[in-house]
Amino acid sequence: MTAAPPAGDDVLRLTPADLRADARRRALGLLVVGLVVAVVCTFLGRWQWHRHVARDAAIAVVEANYAAEPVDLADVVPDPAAALPDADAWRSVVVQGRYLPGSTVLLRNRPVDGTPAYHALVPLLVTDAAPGAFGPPVDAGRVLVVDRGWVPTGSDGSADVDVPAPPAGDVTVTVRLRPGERPSTRTAPDRQAHAIAPAQVLAAGGVDAPPYAAYGAVVREVPAPDEVLGTLAAPSTDPGSHLSYAFQWWVFAAGGLVAFSVSARREWTGVGGPPVAPATPDGTPAPAARVPRTRRARGRDEIDEDAEIDAQEAARRR
Image 1 (cartoon, rainbow, N blue to C red):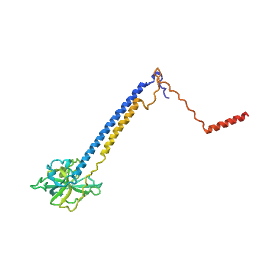
Image 2: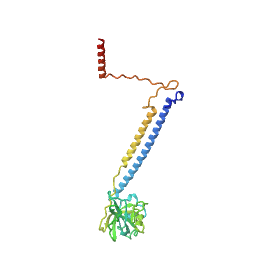
Image 3: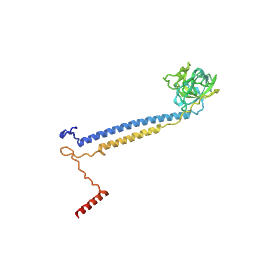
Image 4: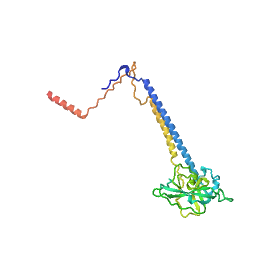
């Protein structure tokens, strides 16, 4: 059995002023939410814009350097221990040296067009970083890690793979320079690596020599090898969708601010809210006015039935 609602003064009555205050609190809450949404979307748009700018700059570097004529390694890298500047990425350089095939390291988890593959990283003991210049050899004794290409991993990557040998003896190598990657903290099997971090690669290959901070992706080897590895892919120049994402976030920011502002205005002014009944002098809401009901028009069946009843009444009177 349900209890009867409290009567008289025990009933909490909301005055029109209370209703207006509550509506304005909701309006302010909606406005705050709209501002938060707009700020968050604006910053997300700026983040995508900065990614677009960075990607655009990287594409410009590729377009300027990838097809440029090769120069001596020492002309681009005067300090072998210094990090390669971003503006010099993909520069083609020539260097003379001798490969150390017994220290080849396989780079893991670098698929090629969806095919599982290992990259063959072979240390090149530099004999002259400026073969095109006159004078004594430059940077002799340093080691440049060279990515010579890729080989398939096999069915599951658990078996040893045969890596074609590099040219023996003195070799002149043309490579495209790349900044060395950050060392990986993951443990790799013997003679394998998870990143092209030159010092880490040399350690995995058992080479004790000072490395170049950059590494090279092979372009040409003289003399040519007996067997060529898989060709390294050219860098992508696709700008991606960062710019369109940035504009989408900014549209969301503007649209969200407008939508929440309109909702807040409706709450503030009472537009679209339930009608408030006028109050009586003692503060109680006045009873709602009764709305007269409109009679439904009689249908065809009702008219026929009335006619039949009238006919029966007339027959009885006769």
